[in-house]
Amino acid sequence: FTGYDPSWTVATQLAPLGADKFAARDFQYLFDSPVEIAPLQVRQWSAKEGNSNYTIRLMVHSKDKPEAIDKFAAMAEKIYRVQVAIWGDIPDYDHGTYSFLADYVPYASGDGMEHRNSTYLVDQQSLEEDGFSQIGTLSHEVFHSWNVERLRPKELEPFDFSRANPTPSLWLAEGFTSYYGPLAIRRAAIDDVDTFLSQTGRTLNSLINSPARQYGGRWPAWRVEPLFAEHRL
Image 1 (cartoon, rainbow, N blue to C red):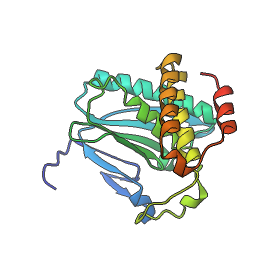
Image 2 (image 1 turned 120 degrees about the vertical axis):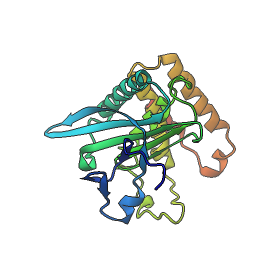
Image 3 (image 1 turned 45 degrees about the vertical axis):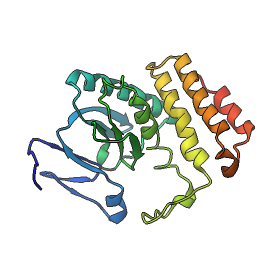
Image 4 (image 1 turned 30 degrees about the horizontal axis):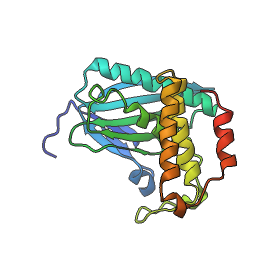
């Protein structure tokens, strides 16, 4: 295709075959694997469990200077290690790698999407412009590499990419992730307790006062209280 620069980097969770060649074991895996080819700034760290060694890669497309990428990578690594401690386990990543594909460019939107061995992160502002607040989405999405990607509601399977896959278990898939994402940031000492509580309060206020709650059912209070009472901040 036109405009390709051979110095660009290919970022994907697909199986590497060498010389910028990649493979998917089946259609489902291919459809679950985002691919980016761009001038990426790459940072990585190692994660070890028993005899297994994994490489965690942060691959960023933005105008940020290397120093900003270094800072963001350090934050991401702290959060990742906190989440490993929460689960007491490292997922068995295919091909020994987990990748953050991050686009922080003005023509993007703001979003995040988890995949089996990678997550896609998007924001319109650079890291420095947004005060590194993109770390919140990163923490949320990487928690999904355990919760939803490997522990997930049964009714989601088999995946059907031609339609929505509704589930009554969103409270587990997204609710727990929305709690532990900010908590991991707090435990990594990136945010203080007041910031964590303020953010949690805004989330609860939004959910409790949303009219949508009347249509989606209620999460009984007795399930909420232990979640907040038994975990250190």
